[in-house]
Amino acid sequence: MRQITKLPEHLFSEDRRINLYYLHETFKAIAEIVSLRLKQNLQIDVPLSGGMWGGSYLIADENGKARTNVVRLYNMVCLPQNSPLDDSSIFEQFMETYHQTARSTFKTYGLDLVEPKWGEPIPYTNKIKPTTTLQMWDASQRVKFHRAFFVWNQAPWEESIVYDAVRNIKVIKELLDLNERPGRKESDELKFLLQDVLIIYFTLKPVLTPDFAEHAEPIIKELFDHFLAGMHDKELIEEQFYRVYSNALVYGYEEALAGHYKQDGLDIQQVENWPVEKINWVPQTLRETLCPYLRDTFLRFKNNLEKEKADRSSVQT
Image (cartoon, rainbow, N blue to C red; front, side):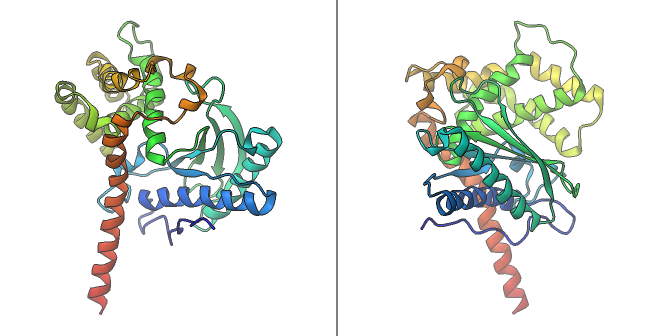
């Protein structure tokens, strides 16, 4: 029997801030529980892997607790290809199982996930096997919603995150392409873009070229500090957007990845046209550098939490 990740005792601290290490572990456990239930109820063996999507863990303290109010819960689930899930009727049962498992799991933490909606394809994912989503709203209003992204190739969480960065670069380039004059956008759209700029920077940080990293660091630091302080002012959001745009950060992100994928005949600007077997695929040169770096973030949270627990126990005794 597969080992199931232990669910945390709680997700929220006394001040209602979510612990992002515990959230990451919860997403892993949900994927594993769903896999087990599919085997028990439908007699199909579908290994699943999961974890946090996006970069909310970047705003965590040393123990993984969010330093701002996180109200959108995003996760990624990696699905095997050439499995029973290729059958549309089985896939519907899978989505129902995932929805029910996520709902019952988060209910123990005070969330009430309702109105499941699934099937929306994500831009710039593989044209033949696009990433799809499941979204549920929280009726308790403790968070806004939970959204899961289902990616068609089983892979470790950290490899899927690197692959997703390729897609995300294409998304932000729609507004950051220096060959296109930026049009007027709502503040919320620009804020989401700036958030992605931060996520990609920190995801790829170990492989950024030294010259680009030196150029980008003060821009990223200022933007990150504004996010921590709470960035709501329209003029400030637009100012930060134009700073990111004029400093061509998106091109530095492309430069960090393009050569690694090109060695295997893959153009990162055409990620949606890659062969399906290259979904969630990461070149060895990137895997050796980025995957340990991403894993170590959550390992550090885990170690600090265990140390804090041990320190409390020693004080009580």
